Length: 58
Image (cartoon, rainbow, N blue to C red; front, side):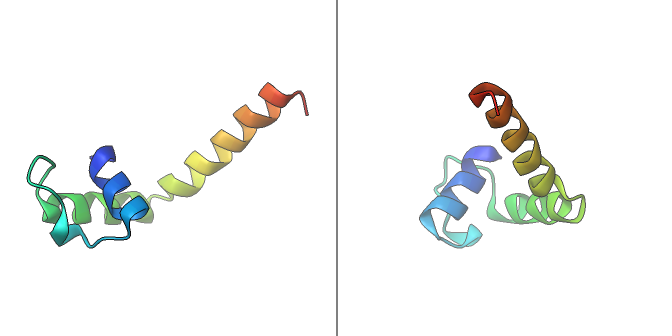
């Protein structure tokens, strides 16, 4: 799922254009919608910032 999202976000492509070796586009779309409603991406960015602050000693 993460590889599929990476293709979508990094490549700027639509879910329907995912390569065949990744999950079906509708599964990727549905999971992305669930994660967006659950504010998963914002939490991930927040946690990553915290890790970077600790790593850099700030």
